[in-house]
Length: 329
Length: 276
Ligand code: SF4
Image (cartoon, rainbow over all chains, first blue to last red; front, side, top):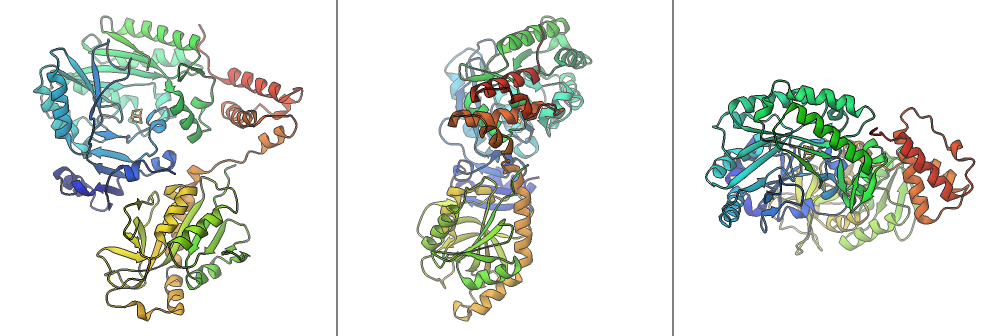
């Protein structure tokens, strides 16, 4: 439930703003000049705001399409991300957004058409496949009933022959995808973890069973599906937990027809980690023994390598032939 | 144990402060340069700033300097204001605060339940009778926000205004007793606001560091080591779900460095492992 909406003065008449306002008739509406006045001000506490985030409606100016960091894309293909939204409905304790942004308020940039112009321009520079990730600064689908992101972006991507879109999500907001014809170059990538990890760290997210149910429906409908086992979370009974989990995931899905699988350990840039550990000093994930190297905080090297190798072996046995990528950043 | 947050109320006029002083049983604890009042538990205080943006900012700065500010501290400016259309005696919270003629805006957050409506607030240098539409007109809020947002958490800072004059009831009708009565009538709303803010501040509370203080008094620690000591003690407490670890485990240590190294070993021992 959104109780407070900040709207940039310049877009107060935008049709998307009007339809979002209509969804929340009781919200207090506050006009601002630029979303940064609210989002980037000093003296904010992410943890406090996460209790009751406001929605900021804004127009994205400046660079809208950016190259993904090394190691984020798939198999070295050129990859870009765009953020029509900043922040997320969910509250995963490991989420790097908590360390990156000062504010937990949701920002929705309503000028979708400008994003699409920039994406088309980027694709026109090359004949090679270009990957675009919409779930870098948010969950791609979690706020779909409000943002109606797919309604505009999916048909537009279908028009650009070399554009691929990855929707990365933990959400079950798939109605809009089931209501349309699957797009040939759009991949729905589900982030999954054992239910015990979800209970402990992925607050407010759908259960594993609900995510798998959504995934199966999309797969049956003809969408490309990918699995993201990232971040893998180290617990004392890691092997038992994840062995059962992987078996559960591959029951009832067509493993062989998956688009791709990625595996990645829990890791964070050092500066983000420090902020997050300060926000949640009593969180076991941040309190445990971690290595600090190359500007990144991660599990001690031996554990990290062992976890990835073991998981790769497990997943390969269940989804033979599906490309598996290891994510390191 | 989380530490309790301190609420500071900032009023420009003694007549605005009076009903609050009585209601919260606040006694004077400071005379000059600003009169400051506090309750017996020192969890709520009130400062009378005097009229104007600068006076208000200075009073906030003065109060902030009286003790160490905590991230969960709450700051509220309470006072009367003019509004073209709102009824006399009605209450509103500042949603966007600006000084007349300046471009900087402040936006207090609304992370708590409240039925109090919100409004823009513009702080003028002089009393105004020509009220801009949809705007509360006062003489302090911008100074309050400028100073309070330097020392406090923006989401725990509020501007609460009670309408004293409007287009049909001019400033000329205002006197001290009238102002006191207006604030008095809104005490229930103010009380609800403060308790909602207090509830919301808990997530920002810091914690008492008694164990670290006691250990730091037994061995020598540099400033950096002292910070690490606090952090690592907290990590051990977090990981040690069965609460078996006690500071007595450090008794044999011969130096601060040894204490830290022992804590590091303890953290490693309590952390999950991936056995090859
Ligand atoms: S779903 Fe993704 S973006 Fe949302 S909180 Fe979790 S990790 Fe962050």
